[in-house]
Length: 59
Image (cartoon, rainbow, N blue to C red):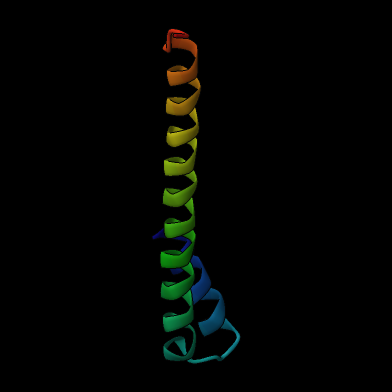
């Protein structure tokens, strides 16, 4: 949220319309958050697989 405010303030200081960049900023924020969540899920799955291999008893 703070990043968005800073970006908009810079754009207004340069004379650019904030409407032009607000959609881009929003989409970039959503994209970054989705990539972060997918990375976390991937890490959790890898940890679960490692734990399963360690605790599995050979037959």
